[in-house]
Image (tube, rainbow, N blue to C red):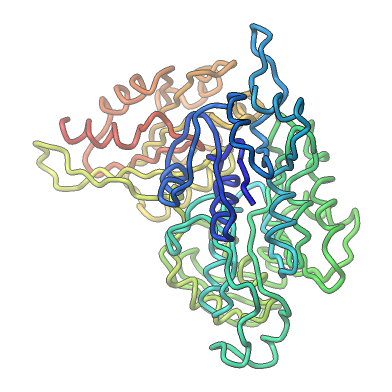
Length: 484
């Protein structure tokens, strides 16, 4: 079929486009304001991108319009529709559906779906689990909200039939726990579309569901934490009795979700009394199953959050027959996801008497807890070296100011913090006042760069955090440092 995707450059819709193309469908799409890595991936796939949402795209006459949740019935100040194409689709009575529903009907049916949900760590854990199953020979399909560096793409169909368990490297009775080809999906609690306000993940019908953690987020669509907990409970309602729910044992919010009802096997991780726990530093630790050491993970990642992500992935993989030891062996070669503590440049300052380079990192952290855990992971890696945190509160939740009071706490382990405050409806300088001279605010990226350049020293680690393009701050900063 020919599908035309509205909002194709979002990480989810871009991944869906890649899967549809791989499955043999004709794919076109439209969006505004694209940025890497998704724009690069779509171009590499040869998918035609149209700028904007003009109604003249009706001339494409696709079999189905797949509508991303960026699209709405909103009107501009002039009274004109913000998305004329959507209005034309509705007027014409053309066939349309949401991304999650199209995926469920055309890709996930007949698969053993492993869905990774949670406020933080979804992308990284989904990538870890995909790599574990790939390393075990299961040829998984996957859809990740980012680009796992082990694969180089955010989505892949995987095997349409289950590989012969007799010849898999880990074979034997445990392998028979999976009876269908596997598909790993990042399961987002954000709403599906303007015409379907359920969370995306209720469409996926997983047999293995990971609940990584749960905090208040998405203040633009959820009134409070209880509203999100209810959506997570709706996800549990779709998991069969033969399925498994993998749950973070450290989270009170997830305990409340389970108390609303769970009809599947439960495996916990994280707490000392959990089924799966860790002993050792996040980069080098034993994996314990009900108190007994069953595996050892030694890998390139750091941070307690990644240690917990690993436990979640190991517990989920065990449900389809991969032993913890085999999973740990796969994690030793896991390379993380683009924009997750990704080193973008290492630059020795011109004329500096010290040869210590300034290291620039790119990270997707978009919530105070994610900012704090990301900085903590870097702190564990670099010791007493200076960390300069550069961030923009860009997510809908942060733009609304719902989390502004947590910002000083989230930046506690950084030596200096630089905030891009452009477009905010609240006073970032006032929110960061508790940090004193350690925090600076500018309403343009140029202003942030000027503040940074006035402070940078040899050996500094500059951590840039945003869930958007951040005005190309990484490249501009690298160029400026070379001329500094």
